[in-house]
Length: 546
Image (spheres, rainbow, N blue to C red):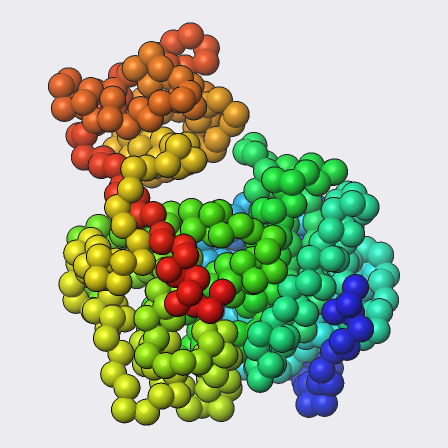
């Protein structure tokens, strides 16, 4: 791998100490690739200590820790607190099973990696109510975190240890040219080689595109995983860059190759973004995720592994989705659960970056402007997103469009106004490539109404399969739906109009099940087709110097 030869930055000031100095010790021990043990060594006087519950753990912490099994009768752990129930105990131990379930905006605490686990201390972190907190790690083989590699044991007492990614392995690995990487052999040689090549290309491109921005070299860890859906992926761009490929073919084909490239290039783009970007901007996910999407989208065009036509379709879809999901909300009134989750940070973030740079008021290149923007974060001299994207370093410049797009007007109003004025995109019929996605959105609307606003389903080749869900009237876990009003869900026609008509006429829509039964699901008929926008790619590429 080329990026292996780049070497890791020297961590001259890493604060590695023996955790005996801490008042509270959190010890994460790899028992097997399927099980982790977490133990808490507490002062005798400490009976209750709160979990820090970073990210969205206040919402999911209870469900996640419900899987923990107490090893003894010393204490309990729930969504908010760690409690000592036996005063004679100084330590509390819990077995934590490997888990690959996804929780939005939660770093996984015990993700299986083939011959070990990806662990993030976020799920285990406790407050300093009972004194200073230190972290210990144990594994039969190797331990990797903060760019460092250890064998069998390691400890960390620095302040940011409470939200830290760690790779725990049953086998011992070694660094190559100063870089640490682990690939689950189950990926297959072709996928491993493909991942290595994609990583090389991504890092080479971003080094040239963002010459003044530091590359935070990660520990690269990749694995395969299984679930009930089709091929997909999930990852983190932290100090351990985790790449998880679900239901992935052992031998890559053109489709899986292209999807993998997008995934890896996006995650590596994050490693060129200064950490302070997330901390300083309001509604930061659109800065972070949208920025990574912009870099990946631009790289795909410049390196020609995506055609202008495909890039235009992707951008048009992002703009359309952003407007559709936001509805009558303005950017300033967009609820945080929308602004910081789901597709909005990616779709709206990509649209804001691309279109903002297309109407920039200077002669500099867009990538140089992104370089300057990220560099300004590192020096503490950054402007607002609107100012930095539209004006860059140009003095006496006032951004014109981004303040409107991110202001108080409904996005369903201001985006069409922007596109009509700039002639960068125009309304167009919904392309057939979007039919399957629209069917999923419509089905989600039906389920949300029937299931007390809960949604849980996955897509098979010819059906929607209901996942684990409670509170529904008609939908049941495992139910396989393949028809709507007698028509195949994934046929050649778009069934949303049929659904809306049925809802208006009878207040119900008939769904055919694979077992031959049918259900008539009540509906309000509120679902509307999104307006699709076709990008004028020739004009846009001229504006973006592509």
